[in-house]
Length: 346
Image (cartoon, rainbow, N blue to C red):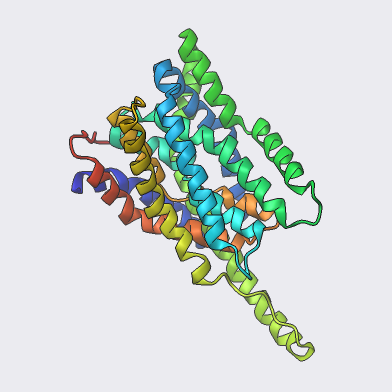
């Protein structure tokens, strides 16, 4: 267990550093979109391409991994929506709560962390899960979020918007190009290879630092919103108006529990179930999937929630709580699954 903590602590320390820098004002909030752009459009695509290009093509087309992850994502989304929808929470907020429960932070955090713990063979499994969540899980939840609208075509319109966003996202394309490079055994040479390698090596530290900065920005904006709400309450109380309330713990903690506890346990159970039915699924892939599910929620879901008019404050709190709690829960999950797994040192 101590060995696993020694691997995971630097990852969470970089997140904490980004949080402290943004919360303390050392990193201006206006600079965070620039960090996001560097990670999303330059560093992470290069890292994903390199992992994909170096992985055997059979690992990148593992049907057992895709089946288990698909079933688990659909169950988590359906269960979270069913448990969340009530008087305060409609389809929009319930759908984004389901997305944040089913979509782990595999891109910014999962690939480098799982490779550090399990070795390079974990990259292909993690890439499969990430590609599915970016294409299928996100599109499904965005479509569900539109069911609140009076327009009967709202879900179809949202689905088209989600698909447009996927085509504009460089990460799925970098994964696809990596798969093609693996299949054709294509490699860059000379300065191009070194440039791609330098960007890929920058992905992990900058992405982790950016996660912390994004979480701090959400906290700062929430603090400003509460201050504005207090002023609005003082000014509007005479008129009988009340300011919007902060997301209740009852609307946050169940989703946190689903993400960090129910999701990895469900993946573990489904993986053993499909193996019992004869579906080929290797032990290393099973471990990588369960640990991917045990990761905190994807940090970009709060931006999606804001874009589609959902309660982004609630989503930001879920992401923050899962990230803090995962500092303890993730090493426990890795230690539980790590019997017989060699943990490389950094």
